Image (cartoon, rainbow, N blue to C red; front, side, top):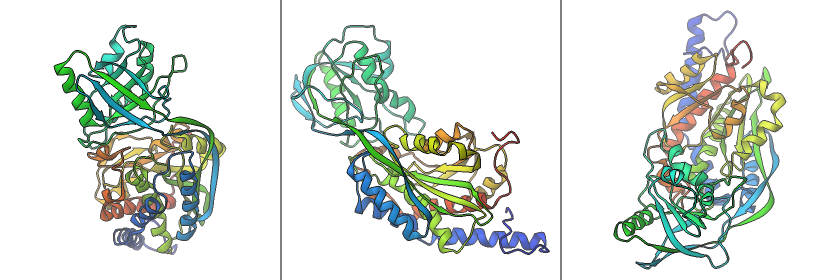
Length: 454
C-alpha cells in the first residue's frame, strides 16, 4: 500500500507508516461500504427534484437542492458558477402509420430538434437499414420524404457500441436534409427491447436546412422494418412540436474539502446534475452526483483532512453538449495547472471492473487504490469522463473507474431511468472507490504530470 503519512511522526519506521496507511485506507473502505451516503443523495435528488432538463426551472431547482445538500454534508466554499445556454423544451410528439397498416407508434423528439409544421408532416418513408446506407445514398431522391434510419446498437461492458450507433442521432437530420428529406425518425440509440424511445442531443450542420428528427422505440422500429418486408411503400404522419426557448441559465455547483497543506492544488471528482426530461435521471447522472458527493461525505464524516483540496463538481447542461464542462474549463483556465487529477462518474451505478489512466506520473498512486479495491488496471487511456474532457485536453491528468455498462443503454435517456434501477450496495462500492482514490491522490507527493507540466 502507498504510505499516506497520516499521524505518523518523523521517526516512524517504514513498517509503522505502512500500518497507518492501511488502517486509514481500510477505514475509508469500511465506512463507504457500510454506509448509504451516495444512495441517499441520489434518492433525494430524484425524489425531491425529479427530471432536470438543462436550462429549465427544474435544473434551477436542482442547483438550489445541490447547494443545500453540499452544505449539509459539510463541504466548504459551496457555490454556483453560472453560465448561459440555448434553451430547448419538448412539446407534443406523435407518430402514426397511415398506410398500409394504420397504427400508433411511440416516438420522442431528439434534443435540439426543430418542430414539424403545425399539425405535423405526412409523407412516404424512405428506409435505410443503417446510417452508413444513408450516407452512401446519392443526392436527391428523398424530396419531401420521412427518412427512417435503423441499425442495432451492440452491447458492451464499456459501452463501445454507443459511438457508432450514435452517428444517426447526431448527424441523421443533416444527412437526410442534404438529400431533400422533410423529416427523420431513427431507431432509438439503445440496447433494450422495451417500448420506450431514447432521446438525446442531435446536431445540425450549419450550412444545411434544419429538419425535425425523432426516435422510435426499438419495438416500433422492428415493426416498421417488418412492414417494409411486406410492402414497398409505407406512409407516416409525424408530429413533434419542441421549441427553442432562447438563452436560459445553467450552472455548475461546487463544494470542497479544503486541503490542509496545499489548498490551491485540486483533486476534482464529479458527476453531472442535469438529465433528460423523460425519466428522473437516476442512472444518468444522479448516480454520479451521489457517488462523487457521497465520497466526500465519507471522508468528512471520518474526520479525515486531506493535504490537497478535494473539489466536488456537479456539472450543469452536460446532456446538451457538455456545456458545463466547457464553462468550467473557460472559467478556470488560468488555474488548471493546479488541478492535479480529475475524474467523473457518468455511467450509472454498477461497480467498476477496471481502472483507466490518463496520467503521466504517479501511476502507482492510482494502482494502490485499484489494488485495495481488487480491480485490475486497464490498458486503454481515458479523458476522465465527458465533462472532464475539456480540461483533459488542456493537460489536466485524469483517471476513471470503468463501470460495467452492459445494460446501461437499456435505460439511458428513457422514461425508465428511475431510482428503482439503482442498487444501494452498488452505489456504496462506487462511493468507496471514489473516496479512496480521492484521498490517496490528495495526499500523494506526485502531481501526476510529466516534468514538462503536460
